[in-house]
Length: 58
Image (cartoon, rainbow, N blue to C red; front, side, top):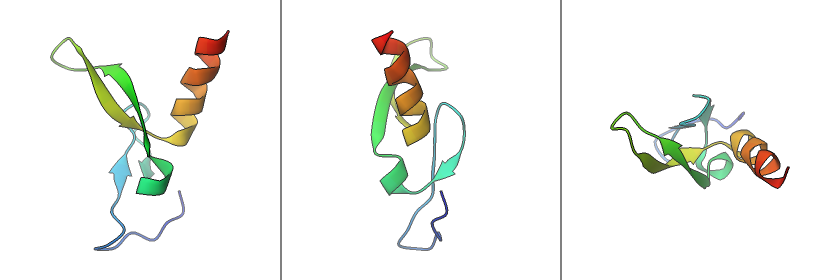
């Protein structure tokens, strides 16, 4: 993401790949395995979301 982060444009981290992205590129959530041993709905980047959707379609 090439967004310029500021007080009003916050940075977010994809919980799958760790990429720093803006809210526009991180609007998707997927259930990911968390440290407590359960699945949690977590913010993911558009790329990771697309990767997992493609895998599910196969």
